Length: 51
Image (cartoon, rainbow, N blue to C red; front, side, top):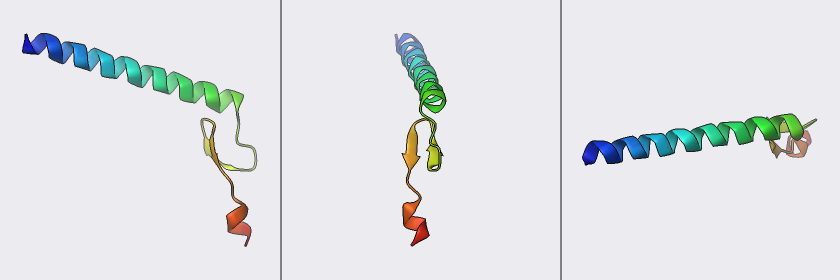
């Protein structure tokens, strides 16, 4: 029974990691950061560095 649960957890984590990777790739290609820093649609403004 424990091995079955371990396989289920492993597969669930693997599927979630795969989906997160696909989402990050999709955001990176559809929402580039331009003049900001970051990737995968998670951009950080660099205006604070110009002060």
